[in-house]
Image 1: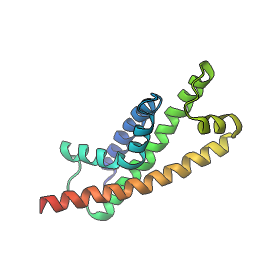
Image 2: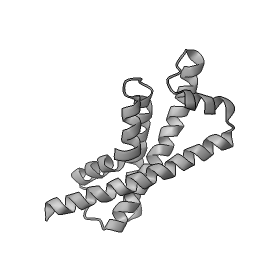
Image 3: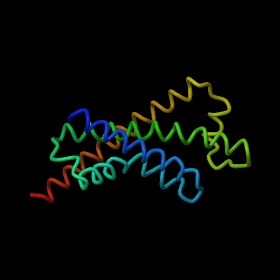
Length: 144
């Protein structure tokens, strides 16, 4: 994979991570958008980039790497947008939809919060790498 493709993947996944962070704040869409972030972000980005012609035929190793990049970048950007907005909403009103996040924000230090973000980013990267692999495998199967 070349550097330009990696940069385009990172930018598109960062955009979707920010959009899903705002969508997670809406009570009706919260759980659905978080599950899309963790499981289905890489197929969405891969399909969009393939339709636009940026992503040609990649090998399996490259598809797994692309899925990992998509998963990690989208989750880190998600946390960079979601956590400050959630903290602001919980201070301004009685917005306590996510009690666990509120508890970590109140009791946790910056290091603890960063550890959780990196850990969940790695989990998201792993799951999205597998889903990108499945996406490329199914697309290859359909094309043959």
